[in-house]
Amino acid sequence: MAKGHECYHCKQWVEDGEAHDCWTTTEAALTRDLSDDLRDAWERLRETAAELGEQRIYASHHSIMFARKSCYFFVRPKRSFLEVVIFLARAVKSPRIKKVVESSKTKRAHIIQVRHRDEVESPLTDWLQEAYEFQPQANAKKVPQKAKAKRKR
Image 1 (cartoon, rainbow, N blue to C red):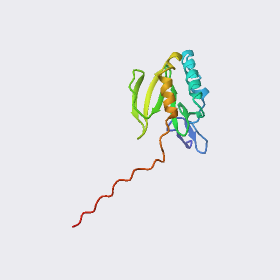
Image 2: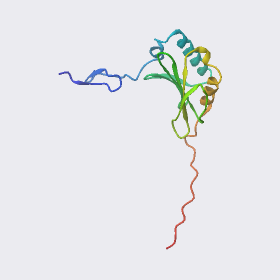
Image 3: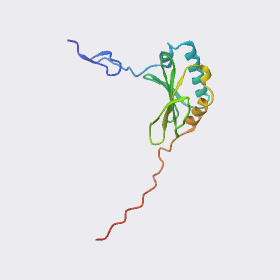
Image 4: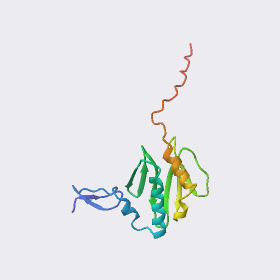
């Protein structure tokens, strides 16, 4: 019987000692099968984000990440839409936003579906700008609480 294991993520059989990294991918691989409309929307979205300033753009598993010190938004290409997840400091209510999830103490993940190039405009581009500019204070000093007074017995 062959020695190895089935990868938990991709379900591929991996022989013992064989290198396997199903998490590593490329933008091209993730966007290869997009329809023309989705490809145009992706290109406009990427171009808009790249114009915001210095950042890292990289593919990871099923997503394309956009990060400064930390990821401020990512895109998951789907069959019929681009799932865009933008991290903002506040919860935004809009018909464009399908769902808002608290992702940390300081950030809310806003899930948006993009189906056409024309959807990559305000307010979406405004939210991208806001997310790009938001950098939570990672090393912010906590305000010390008053020491509890000891009760005398």
